[in-house]
Length: 452
Image 1: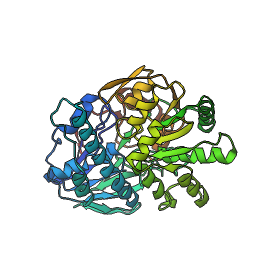
Image 2: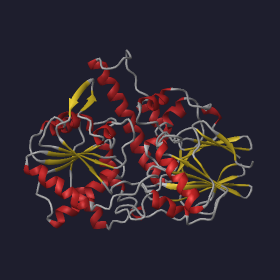
Image 3: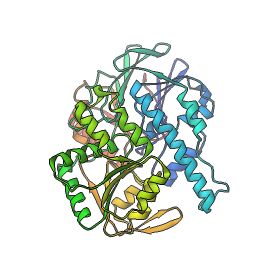
Image 4: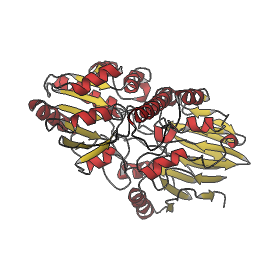
């Protein structure tokens, strides 16, 4: 069996792992690169394999850095199945068309306003490409051992993180290769905890938070303070939030704060059609999360939903205290950019950053304290308050990643991926020092012979 690291190696995005067995090829995840421009430009290059040679794709979960390149794969000749949990498939039915729509909108905006060096600017892929990719999906339920290639079986286990997220165990010839996928937190207020790791000969583990621990700050109390002081000065609380997972957690927190009387009565808006539809999915998959039916309804109804561009534009120009949750979470695209352009110059408003901000993204630059942000071909001054709200990440931190590894026995080797270089190497060192297991941080493009 051969394993190639074709994404999320030396970086936290673009997950793609090629597994070769007896002349067949399985692609584990097919994600977009995000963040630094040099990484984003990789999305425009031909995939590092012949798409028509891939026999099947298996997704660990639906986030775009794991699924967002599927339309490119299909456009370049892939004809096989895309295997995923039913919830992951449903989330992808929201995410992939939304990603394509944003790219089409951004290209159209660039052409109207001449903000691109390319004439004409083209989207990375289209809505038609996204729909063709969705036609390849086939369900692979949790805890179901399935032959995905001749002689190679797959089994998925719950990973927490977001709806449908899973860890993947591949077994052939009595040996097991385990992919952690993106692991959630055992103490996540929304999602159920990851299941324990099965025995494996090789483990590929994510390291998004491999060099840090989550803040012990009470995020509910911190959010209440931010909303209260921003409302007092007449400003808007703008939360760039991932449409899958973080937006729903923010709505749950606002619902609970309202129930407690901990925040003033002010309008709350969810401005992301995809996040709106995603919120409704939580009622379809109650076994995946911790909420009671009553709390699930509260989370789904606490905000006014802004679906249309007209409603979104009205929010951007509104000048009354409110809370606006909008995608994307790292401010890489979507409607939140228009809200940022309107709110960043306003000293009364507050931008609340939640979750991981990958290097090179606008979210990371705001978090680092930059005083202007480049959007739509212009430099927007940052006069608004910028707050990073700790404790809301959907990823396990370093201690929780080690805790998950301790639920299995020693493998032959651990491959540490899906992290910035410092985070990945910090986790590698802890695995070697605290567990005594051999660990490697693979380079992008590296191939290893697992039977060697």
